[in-house]
Amino acid sequence: MLPQSHISYTIAAVDLLKDRIPALKKVDYRLIALAATGPDLLDKPLAALYFYRKYKSAVLFAHTLIVHLGLFLFTAWKKPRWWPYALAFNGHAILDRLWFFHDTWYWPFRGWKFHAWGKQGSEQEDIKLAYWRAFTKRPDLWAWELGGLLAALLFVVRNKLYKPERLWHLLKTGNNYEL
Image (cartoon, rainbow, N blue to C red; front, side, top):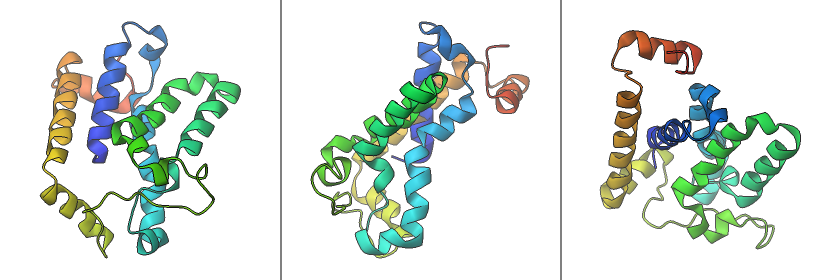
């Protein structure tokens, strides 16, 4: 899934849940967006710098259960007010359906040797070609991206972000609860 879809699904979910969960009314949507892409923000640079040549994957350590569980426990223990952002970070694993990629998701519980994501068909010698190949060979990915576009549209319409002053307020403050 591309970053904009991770962000769209997560922000739309937070927006829909904020009426039922009052603590979500004051979240900073900018931080939610960063958290929703957190695993990719950590792994993609590592892959580009070194690990892609070795593993032919950009789904690395931040896409493991131990990282997601560790963040959840740290947040619950030390930073309970950060729970919406930890949930957005962990939601990344749900959207990527990481449990299907046992060798990556369950590291190091299946041994200390790291086994990168084994999704066949997207590996390339050059990291820049991996997404191109994945999206031209796997049309099912287009459905997820179309869903992300619809989630973004839902968020825009629900919050009237087609009005420039409302959009600017959200971008400037990170919230829309004052509007």
